[in-house]
Image 1 (tube, one colour):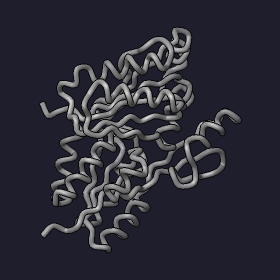
Image 2 (spheres, one colour):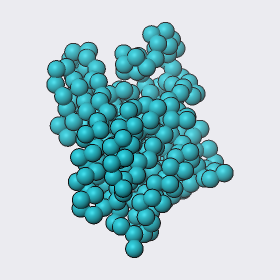
Image 3 (cartoon, helix red, strand yellow):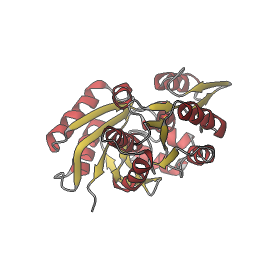
Length: 284
């Protein structure tokens, strides 16, 4: 008989309360440093506070990976309750959280760490898949192996209205930011091999760009796993978000369309007015 399985994730998967409750996901939050204060992602700080602070002071937050001791305490708590734990981490290429989780997990027999090779709901897609596997009665080791293999099928991208946060956070050059602003470019950021890269560069108003981006991403829906899709945004207005959700529903017959808001860690790097459509590709 399989040991009962707990699905866990760091706070970067941006699942939202509904899905966290549906699958009983336990969240291990990253840290947020803002000014001389330390916060815990999703616990005592939210993205709007970060945006307000930036608008008032020009100061960006710094994010901090979950450390080894924090992971060890988390694993000890749940394994003592009789669970095998499958933990999902932001890409090892983007944070030391995965390495820290692996080091902590080495002290436990029934803890498995999955490198999502992604961020935000790109990783969230794997967490939801794991939740379905738990319902199907699969073991923790099977779930971890299957989800690690599934990571290569995640299609994750997002469009950014402004490069301001990425530039000031040291993730794009001043020249690139200036050029994008002068030409009114809205870059599509894609996740490839666990890293962020620049995809197509759109031009025009943000709402029109999002329409074109979503159409490009979904195409005729061939090759897409139509079980579920995420529309995930950072601080977009409600009208724009609903337009995007409706367009996704029109273009592809997904069984479930999830709308989620990016948490503090992701929002700290992308800034306001960022939106992505994230889904799984079929196994080729």
